[in-house]
Amino acid sequence: MSFQYRRIHMAYIAAGAIPFVVWRFLSTTVWPDASIAAYLLTAWLFLTLLIGYPGPRRRWYWKPVMLMVALHILLLLALIIGARAVVESGVRPPTAMFFSLVIAALAGESWIALRLIERFYR
Image (cartoon, rainbow, N blue to C red):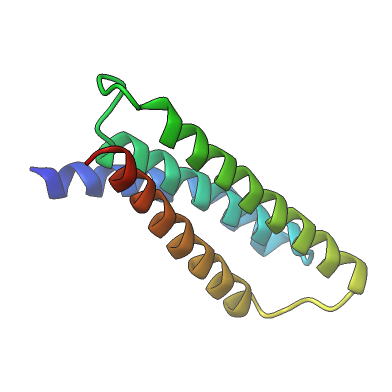
């Protein structure tokens, strides 16, 4: 049951990414890539909080959530600054290279989120 529960949420995330993918094929700038990366990072964090997090019934619920949100905002800010730097330089990196950095950022953010959850829920 748990596997199907997660699969349906992943399907919702993928369906939400469709407009960004269409925009990507219609545009030659880096902004569609940055937008879909921000969407996927935010959707993954939301999915992590929805499925894997114990919930507001716990005493220390808001401390790790606020830390995760602050980290996420910093990550999105770095993504926007990087996208602006790419636009200003005029050199567009390959999409695969860009998304490999996004996957590395997602892995790092997830690792830190898991460590925060472990820290506050021992």
